[in-house]
Length: 340
Image (cartoon, rainbow, N blue to C red; front, side, top):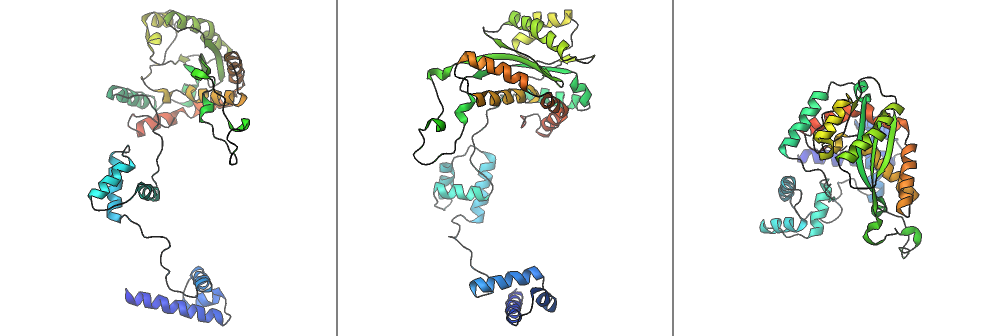
């Protein structure tokens, strides 16, 4: 090992000597059998630091040994909810005293950062198995098969909902400038409940549900809005309807309504909003509505209707076209929640 270091020091000195005689980096490299990039790096180091020796690492030495870092990573892997205080105490018991800042810096160097845990539907083992069964049975379905599905769902849209998470760029001491603030009212300003549907051909009808929805109201919505949407979008023969397993949807009277009209319903795994592409359209709608900043419930409803109608059919088509990716993700995640 020592001979290698001696040779590298000697090579560095020879490179500098040849450079001082006016020879080019290419010539020096060919003469010494060293890459041109290595020659250039050694010459730049010599010009900057007047030495070709290895420089000492910059910054303070790491307070946590590699062994303790591995121990910390194992702890985080087993329980991602572990706090920095817990890690400080663990290391202290192991004989290493550090601060929470040191813990944060160490984890960041390992590619770990603190993030807010996402809220996702509670998945019990029966839900996980149902999701896997659905994904595996549908993996061979083609894009054309998914084009025959009419997707539906309900959503609550708050008056100042999406604005609450908005960030702004501002200068110091301008936090109260109207452009840098988000208007709020007591109790959140209210919200509206919407029902909507779409297919690969575009958005169907969107309506506001003004009262608490029950089975009878849901069936009325289907009659007055779902069926007209099917006709308007000119669904292909053999189309099927999708809705989740809300009690209103699975009630005996609702099932009877579908049976009498000879309509086919897609068997759906519970607790699976990530498998319903309409969730992506709801997000699109909320972003569009937030840009227009409605100031009251009446304006909120009007803007929701306008923006829903403006969503391009291509957006709907792309969501359906890539549906198989959702199924692949469910299988890859062993039935648990996916990024969708």
